[in-house]
Structures are given as C-alpha cells and as structure tokens.
Image 1 (cartoon, rainbow, N blue to C red):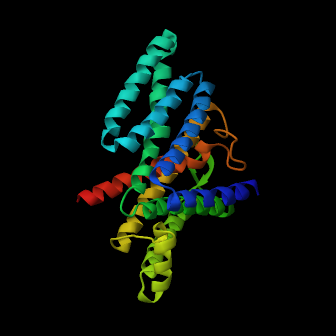
Image 2 (cartoon, rainbow, N blue to C red; image 1 turned 90 degrees about the vertical axis):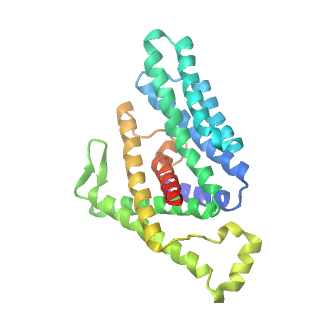
Image 3 (cartoon, rainbow, N blue to C red; image 1 turned 60 degrees about the vertical axis):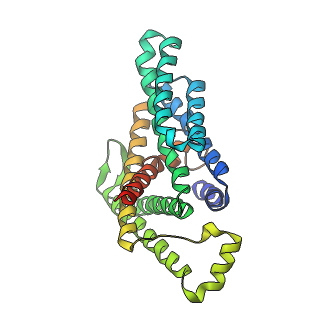
Amino acid sequence: MKRVVTAVVLVPIVLVLVLLAPRWLFTLAVAGVAALAGWEYIGLAQKCAVKPPRAALLVSLLALFAVNFEWPDRTGAFFGLLCLGLLVYCTFFRSVVQVMADAAASIFCLLYAGFTLLALPMLHEESNGPSLVIFLLLVVWAGDVSAYYVGRAWGRRKLAPALSPGKSWEGAVASLAGSLLVAAALVGLAALEQEPWNSVLLSWLERACPAAILSFPDDLWYWLVLAAIVNVAAQVGDLAESALKRSAGVKDSGSILPGHGGVLDRIDALLLAAPALWYAHVIHQAL
C-alpha cells in the first residue's frame, strides 16, 4: 500500500513538471533529484569504507546542470573539468591511502547520478520534447510494473540471482512486453489526437496545454525499437544499482520514499534508460 500511495502522489507531480514546467524549473527539478541520488550514493560508498567529499561532489552535480542549462554545447568539456577538480580535491584533502578510492567514487558518482540524468532536460528541449520524456517515463514504468507483478506471480527462472534474487526471466519478458504495448498505445493516441473529428479537443489542448499534444513522428516500428532499447537499458540499470547495493551490503539506497526505498531505488532504471533514448534519438537524427 505504501508503494502505491507514494506512486499516486509522485506520478502526477512528475507529469505536471514534464507538461507544464518551464525549462529552468524542469532542469532544477532534475538537478534536485540528481543531488538526492548523489547523497544516497555517498552513503553507499561509505558502507564500503570509501568517503567521497560530500560537499564538493554535490556542488559539482549542481554545477553540471547549471552549465548544461546555460551552455549545453560545453557540457562535455565542463564534465571533464569537474572530474579533474574532484581528483585534485581528493589529492589534497584526503589521506594518501584514500585518494584513489575516494577520487574514483567521486568521479563515478558525477557520471552515474549526474551526467546520465542530463539526458532528461536535453530530451525535454527537443521539438517534441515533452512527448519524448512522457514516452521514456511511461515505457520504463510499464516495464517495471509488468515485471513486478508477473515476476511475483509466475517467476521461476532467476534472471541474475547474484545481483537481484527476486528478478526472473518471466518478469523480464513481461517487462519488455509491457513497454512495447505502452509505446504502441502512445503512438496510437498521438495519431488519434490528430484525427479531423477530434479537432475540438485538439484546439482546446493547444490553448490549455500544448505539451499534452503528443508528437511521435516516424513509423510505429521505430518507436517500438526505441521502446525495446529503453526497456533493456532500464532493466540493466535496475540490476546495476542492485549490484552497487549488494557490494555495500544494504537492501535499499535510502528511505525517503515510503514503499520504494531511496531516490536511487526509484530512478535506477532511468539512469541508463534516459541516456539510451537520448543517444538513440541523436543517432537517428544524424542518419
């Protein structure tokens, strides 16, 4: 019940941000999530006797989003500069025996909790940005829900028992199927919105919330391929975070979200799925 209540509260907030928030507010919200994820990652690292510099790392995470907001074409260069800065910080403010571990953990956290989530504001800024972000979120959520319930009911063959004993191949297949069905439904809904007989609703949406007019150019097969890529990346992201938690000897990354654990537990799939969608989208545009 806690899991359901938390989802009922958070999902509408997320959708409102995607559909209505201006660019600065959407970026700020994602940066806040990245900072919370970074905070939890530092807690996991400390369980392994590694102590990334908390203040320097959180400032670096927020600075990464600020630079991406103002100068998106310089994000890669600034990311490299921040990594070097964290190395220098650990060199002079950590004991010699801790420098390698602390610097490596800090730089990985900047990549894992920060650089990956930059894909969200970048997707949001595309011509059909809100539709892309809605596509990403619903495909990931559908896969997660399908895997959870099918895996609990019929899961027999373990997917990766050393990483996540509760996950099964049956759940993984159901996850992929759920993502594909939602992707097809979204593309169908976008086509339905453009039907001539739907002109009254379309006109109202253009005035009230233009971002709610879904836009999925290209053929259905393209979006199904994207959904499959996103789903596989999401499942790998889930397993990757499970591996991090197991190496730290904890069940959840935190307790801020009742029924879901921590922020990292909730966004683990997005940490790989968001950049996967972004890079697939960029490659498709370049071809």
